[in-house]
Length: 76
Image 1 (cartoon, rainbow, N blue to C red):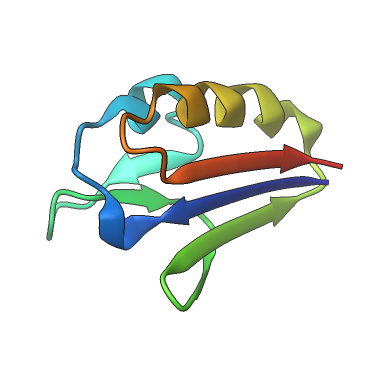
Image 2: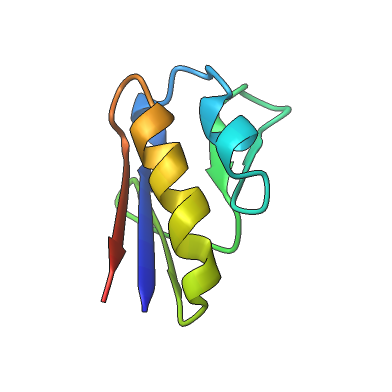
């Protein structure tokens, strides 16, 4: 299982996550912040849980690229 979490409220809109993982992230046209696609929002934490382990590599790249460290990626 791959679990990716985004603290969207703290996003600064740098677009690095989209560049590193366009299948997982896109930028909102409304507020310029990152959106974790197919995620569930729980109290400001947007979480995507998927059995697809091919998402792990782009998730890690996005996590490392984020300058404000609001993306976390775990693989179980």
